[in-house]
Structure formats: C-alpha cells, structure tokens
Length: 272
Image (cartoon, rainbow, N blue to C red; front, top):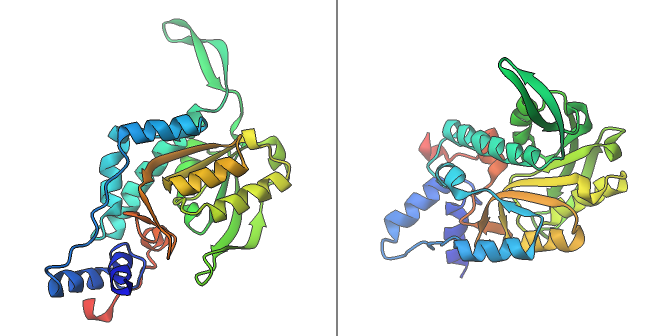
C-alpha cells in the first residue's frame, strides 16, 4: 500500500523530485500501472449543482484544454503560469457576472441603449487571498478590477495532522460593506477555506456577499463549505473525482499548485 501511495504522490507532485520519481517508476516497473482517474460525467455534475444551488461549474468547453495543460506533470513553469492565469481570469469574469447589476440608459455613437453595469464600484469589491497559493489570483484580479481592495489570510496546513492552522490576516476596515471574492486554487477537505470564511464572518461580512473561487474542487470540500455557510456562492472550474484521504490531495489533481506556480518545486540534482 505504501508503495502505491508513493507512486500516486510522486506523480501528483506531492513528493519532491516528482518528475524523476515518475520516470523511475515507469522505467523500473513496466508492468505496474498508475491509476487512471475518470472525471464526473455531465449527469453527475448536474446532480451536484442541483444539490448545491449556489455552486457554479464553468462549462468544460472553456476549461478542459487549460486544465489538461496545468495538470500535466511535464508542464514547465512558463506554460503552467500562463494557463493558470487564463483559467483564473475565466473564474474572475464569472464571479463578476454574478454581481448585481444596475440598469440605465446610455448613449453609443449611433444612439441610446439599455446598459446593465455593476451595481458596485471597484472600491466596493475586495479580493481576499488565502496565502500563499491564493496570491496567484491577484494579477488577473487587479487587471479586471483595478480599484478593488486586497485582503490576505495566512492559513497553512499542518503536514502531520492535515488540519489548518491560522497565522495572519490583513483585511480592509470596511470589508463588512464590500462584496468579497475569496480565492484559493484548490478545495480539498475545505478546512482552510472554512477557517477563512469564519474569519470573514467575524469581521461582519455577510455570507450572501461572499463568492469563493477555486480552480479544482471535490464533493467533500464543497459539501463541507455549503453545510457550514449555505448562503455563499462557489465557482469552480472542475470537480475532481477523488480525495486521497491519507494525504488529503485531490486526484488527478494538479500537485502542489503554489510550488508549481511560484517556482519553488524542489529539483533533484541528478536532473541538473
């Protein structure tokens, strides 16, 4: 069993030098097969969205190529960042599309038309990043909403217990009056996101004013958040079929998103 866990962990980027480890596994154990994960079908996804009415899953026609690239263990940092940013932008635009609009009449070069624009100014919107990986959202966020506020919450998972531990927060003083977009690329057990949501509520933010964006999620994490915070909205690009319980990673997953995006993946000297 431990041998199989090493094989899975290495190829998902959970262990250091994962590229070398995967190559060694494939080279030395030709008869062994790595798990082949199959995604939820359309029917299962529709059932999930019926169960959670505030859940939005991005149409796969927009995301399946991008996700295929960033999941690939062979994708280098340049392509990983480029495609992660593309996917993040899609999620942000979807979040903004769900914010209340105001209707009024405006003039185009050829005449008048009914305009439907955001009810809130940029300054009334706050992106809150769960550090460190959530910071990957901020470049695209500020391209879209240049005047938005930025909040940050540092929550790290204890590698021995897999429980989240709170370290730091810096939030706008008026955050209770803002529309809050909470961002973290992965939703596995939901422990870190749940803690971040409670911190926001402690600062007076209403659940219905919070949208949580995550690239990849799973049914367990979604279920936890909606059971504890039923009025929040969640937008995800894909729901992975498996949560590896021993290590609390999604499968097929992306590996350690933060390490891959920020370039802190450990390399084996034998590769250099």
